[in-house]
Image (cartoon, rainbow, N blue to C red):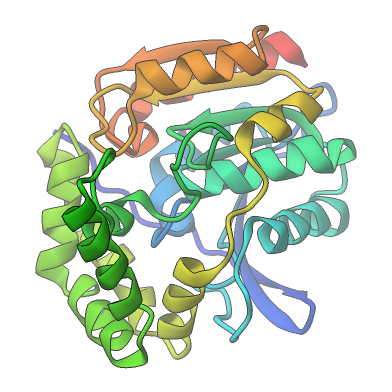
Length: 307
């Protein structure tokens, strides 16, 4: 059984006139880089609670709510990898105060990759847990895979499917449809249903977890964030970013992830960054939350090996 742990109280940092929420735990370690944990789409610092508690004995640990998510402000902006890259880079510069090891899940992994590749002075290392983001030769997007898969046609569509797919995309660009879809996906039962698809260990899907994902979706501005994430142009391709990357890279894959083919995606990462280290875990899309007792030691040992 998974242990339910209370979130660690956090604080706010002002960035470009907006309140950004973060959590800080553990003491600064002279010989070890601090860790910065970055959540995926629809999640928050709460999603890292088991990892913060498990790692703060050995490291100074930060977790942050990306602008538009969790307890951070939700202004009407164009949300993108570039925006979150700048937010994370400035946070490391102004709050953390030294190079950090960035660890990101899903959409947060893509944001961390953007920082490590394009702002190398901020990154001591990079850990990606089932990271999102498009490769040049594929049609995968950096947008949230869960909802994307519900509104886009399958690969190699027939002409009819393509027409229907384009129609569906057009429908979901209309404000009323966007509003209705958002009302649907933020229902607690829909959140539970989605988590049951992407978590291998169903005991990790607690009422606390559902509440932590549901609560921010009722904040003012949450609909605008949802719409923006879906309408923003694709960010820089993952292969382009990997070619720019110079810091050590660890990949932690939840192999039972229905949204990401971990083995196939691993090969692409290896093609562009062969010196990476990786581990495949018996978990779904969020291995850090499902298997903290496996993820925390792997992350700890790897960071100590590069420090």
